Length: 92
Image (cartoon, rainbow, N blue to C red; front, side):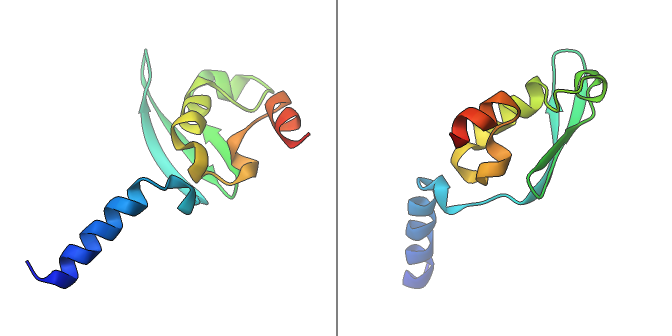
């Protein structure tokens, strides 16, 4: 392996320990829930989930989205980190 690639690998390891460098603006993931698989989307700070709870409640979130927010944490823009009362509390 050449020294240039070794330097890139070392840099990648450093970056992997600094998730705040990354900002997700959109993605789609399959979330294996307790009863079924659900598709979770993030697009420009707006979350969507294919689960019944998300579709039937006006809260605008569900356990799958909240789990993704915790997992991705520092890699999310501020407007995608929280929903509802949590967003208000975080902003204030």
